[in-house]
Length: 374
Image (cartoon, rainbow, N blue to C red; front, side, top):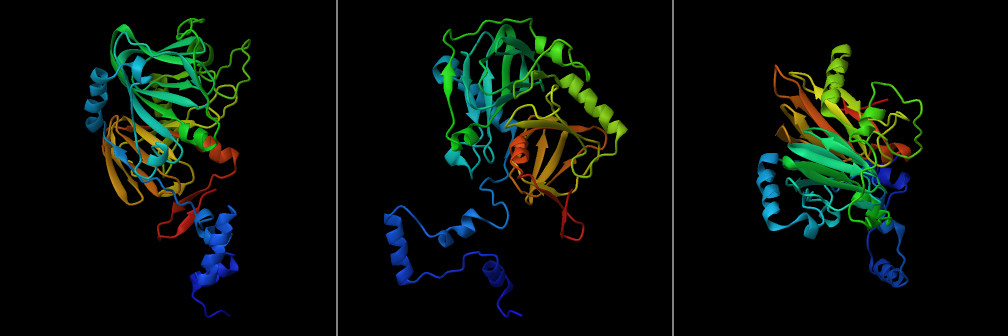
């Protein structure tokens, strides 16, 4: 039976580093460094932690604070000169990679009536969630989609895409979500501008919704073998209606209320290879229990008001606010209203976690202990 302190004993039996520096060791490390090598035990505790140690911190970005600054950019830069007129969300722990959380990027883009950005394609997967305005549209590989508040649209990696606002519309703001930091970490990023700057619309407007948006129905003649959803646009009205029906039919999940994932209608899986998305409804008066899981999550409030507690930080939110939950952070969500429901849109890196076999989840038990979830 050991008489060593438990933490020290655990490190030794598990092969963790517990080596004190000596003049001889420091000299040895210097010699290894000159050979562009190193001793594993000097970094083992950092690169192989007992559990995920996210550099991201929980953050709440209040739309009321950001909106004025987003709109101000219109008078300062044009879409043509700036490429994209976007104010990005910069997590204090991820400033080196311009990430909102983990390996996910987020920004607020604004366009005025009559403006149209050039068509481009890139290695990163992207999505848009419309916050306000009228007349916005996106064109993806020749498919044009009209967009309204709380609509969710995909621009998958490798597709030609562009955005604009009709001349008779109103100024539009939407959230962009991309996996730029992940693609850059993998050193796999490419970017191209369309040779004609704009792409031709080759299909009826909103044809993707007409063809693939049927309630559980798949068109007989359609063929689709690409690694992302052919339903480029997910409209808010049917999404909210589906959530309401689901919430009435099932007891709320103790952690997330009524949580539903946007899916690829062909496979039933995530909408894109590296980015997943969901919408959840918190019933009136709902107070979720705390849990945590691997993966990074960016939330935007689509409806209502409430609060979330993330690693002990309480964030009171309302419509259009954005907040993040870092990987393996304890979190819980609550609806502040006793009469109205609340809805949270979320995009995340769950497809990556699941495909690599890295997803893990556990609940905070009532007695303060840990309770792994199946």
